[in-house]
Amino acid sequence: MNWAAAATLMTLSVSVRCARDFRYYRATEPESVKHDELVKICHRLRRNSFALQNLMMKELTSSTFPFLFLLGRAIHDDLETLHRDILFFDADQIIAIIPLIDAERNRWKNYNRASFYDEALTGQLDHAIPAHFDRLLAHIRELKQADS
Image 1 (cartoon, rainbow, N blue to C red):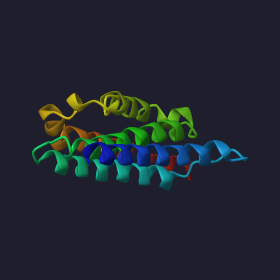
Image 2: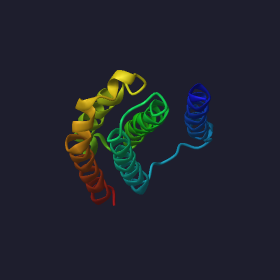
Image 3: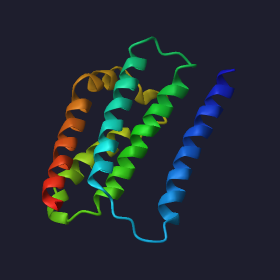
């Protein structure tokens, strides 16, 4: 039963990622990324990190790990999307944002390992990660003033 749930969840997460990538690369005209889309990604990062924190507050079992991996992958994928989409803005505007995104991408690169979901991550989800996402969102909100 646990393997079936894990396979289903991983298939779902890969399908969502493939659909997103297909839409992005299939576009015939170069897309201009909207500021509001970046803000939505930041809010989604916060929601998924809170969901992950809530899940990790309970005892972790083998049936919990597929959900941890799914949330971790969603966070990782959103950071990748944010990194790709932020490049549509002027270099002067994003110079402070790229290192913030890269630091989080580096943190979440091991989302698919069970050892990633440890006490250290739980502690980071309490303060460091939300604070990092808040700084990222603050910088992205400044982009709107710069590109308007």
